Length: 314
Image (cartoon, rainbow, N blue to C red; front, side):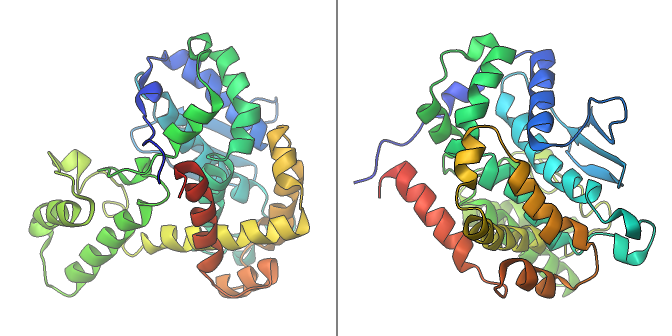
């Protein structure tokens, strides 16, 4: 018997943008992405679609703020901070050399998805962080931890990939992969992309796309020439599951530390096993060295099953 479906209505409170910017500063400080000190190598700006850019001691992220959806910026900042921490913690002895770059897009997305979801949608993180955002935005004082967690982890159909929950997210990736495959096989043309996109969203997610901004134009990847990028998100999810299992093996009490706002040991593990390794190894070798396992979706699937069976009571 499943529990009552959670409501996201509590997330639609009006939070002024200046208070959301304060919450962003709290997030980056908690994660260890320095944007505030006198020699900070980080910076947060605003744009329509969040992204990360930079290298070593100058790594910048962007986010978007919506006054009636304050968690949108929270999760985009968590995601982009994961990318930024990877870039900031590359081996400084290898700077400006090919080996001194990141390993792959898939490994990069494992870092962003780890901080966004494994960390950022966990009960332990919000046990520590919810009181902090209530201080920054007192109108959130009535938020209860359990109802908030259910809201930010609600499984539902959605039109926008970056707003999707962990369970349905991969459907967004499958749609993009299939469209790219058909595009390069000359089964569809660029002009036919919007209609093909809308049809797949109706078929796979049961949603009606009203315009191209919430449809085929929602991502920047294709316009930037980044074809074939979408599977990197799926790989990132899989890697993040393996990384979480390895961290749990090496740091059995890391979730307890997280509930106290302490991420130093997790960050150090990632710095040593992922970030500092740069591009020394191919991704399949890097993940094998870091986790002692080959590419394997089972840890991620087990993570989802355990988490959502607890949330939904099945």
